[in-house]
Structures are given as structure tokens and as C-alpha cells.
Image (cartoon, rainbow, N blue to C red):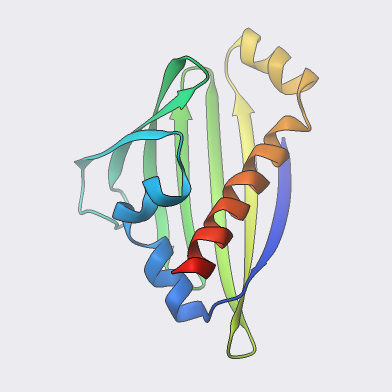
Length: 145
């Protein structure tokens, strides 16, 4: 499953990147995040791996982030793997005038287990909706900072 989403952030691109690129800010716009732990490679650079734990309802979901590309503001791409799911997200940031940023995400999901394939099929609209929720949460956070 592939999709693209866009949002305008009312903040200059340099300020948006400073906020986006700081892992200490993750919990400020992702309230479901329980923990973020760097596990290998040079932090924040291509090849680096981190473990993220999210609370999904009453259960924890652990995923491994691997940074593919870090050429901010043009691109930040990473993969996120958890049991039954592979997700690749390409983030691009472009200035819109002096005071706004256009954030585009290209999202790709691959389901590797039968259960997740079925969930992906029956809940196709839930994945973009969740991604847009995260984007809106970041926008709200960034505009307040």
C-alpha cells in the first residue's frame, strides 16, 4: 500500500527542521510514544537504528527505525519494522515563502504476515488517517514552539 500526504506548517522551514530533527521532541507530538532508544550506528545518520515503543490501546508495539537518507530539509527517509509490517516513510520539506513549510510524506506499507495482510486490506483508510493525525500533531506542536 502506498500513499502521499501533505500539510502546510505555519513556521519557516529552518525552524521546522530543528524541531523535526530533535528526537527529544518526539514525545511532545507523539503522545503514544513510550520510549525511543538509539541502538546502533551514528545517531541521526544513515544506517542508524533506534527502537521505538508505542502504546497502542492497552498493548505496547515495538518497532525498529533505520535511517536511510538524511539530507534535511530536502529529505529524511526511514524504515519502520514491527511484527508483520514494514513501513518506509520519505519526508520532504519545502519553504512556502518565508514563513511556511510544505511537508510531504510518501508512505509505503508492506505486510509480511497473513493477519497484517488482512488488516491492511480491510483497514486501508486507517493507515493514511493515522499518518495524517501524526502530521497534524507535529504541525500543532511546531506552530506553538
